[in-house]
Length: 339
Ligand SMILES: [Zn+2]
Ligand SMILES: [Zn+2]
Ligand SMILES: [Zn+2]
Ligand SMILES: [Zn+2]
Image 1 (cartoon, rainbow, N blue to C red):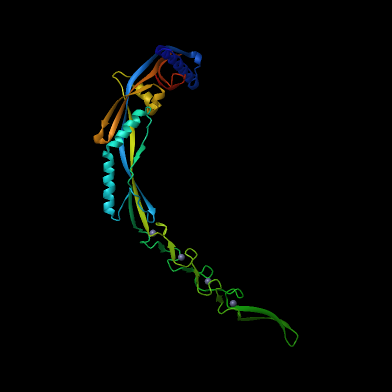
Image 2 (image 1 turned 90 degrees about the vertical axis):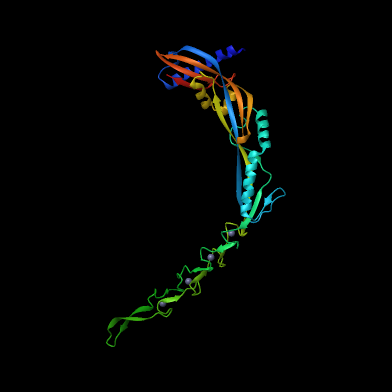
């Protein structure tokens, strides 16, 4: 099948898509759709993928003391540590092998195999800095927040007083008794007697929950007044470990010959520059190194079939542009309507 046959095929496929779209989204039926003109064509343009290196210090704090490996660097001097980390980061930007490897990798792999920010190298040397925990000043424990470090809290039953209301007299300190007495003439009368409560003094008895102390052991710290420091898990120190990662951030751009209509760029944006290999032919033409900026650009030549349609629906003309997904598929990937 020659390329002109392919184009004819695209033309048929695109006409069908335009007709189906019109029937779905308007009150017109496919019978009303008349294709006045179908112009299949191949567009040629260039895609540039610029890879720029980005070196990142990944610093994490680990609880306790961690020992460096044979390749690693360790110091207790924080300023020296920061200097070393910074030096390594700058050296990574200038490291020629990183760009060499990236060029080899991108050249040997299909178009847009690296389509988003990707880590391409982790430096074997890590940085270790062990320092005193500021949360506990190195003690590993902190004062208990529930009891303020005393190990005791106010008794919940007596609210710290050590005494509670007497149950027998309900806190009044006295008991009232009513009785009926009969006098010598045989008359009965009622008599009220008030006397002190025999179970308490003044309506209060000692609290049995706290043994009259008004205090109870703090359950948060089990009475010790101290809690394990959560910032260091009780180690009293932390170790900052920094790893240097190099990422590449690919950026795509389309470069079109003069006279290319705008819809070509719109189509590429809609399809996505990273997915263009499914829609056209793409070959690597040139590798442009920009080592001063830790960057490299890959220039690809791209040919992509399009079909321009002029559609007449009951006397209304509209223009359509379609791109086709692949040679085997009859489904256009994207279409645009310009009235
Ligand atoms: Zn701590
Ligand atoms: Zn406590
Ligand atoms: Zn009482
Ligand atoms: Zn109590």
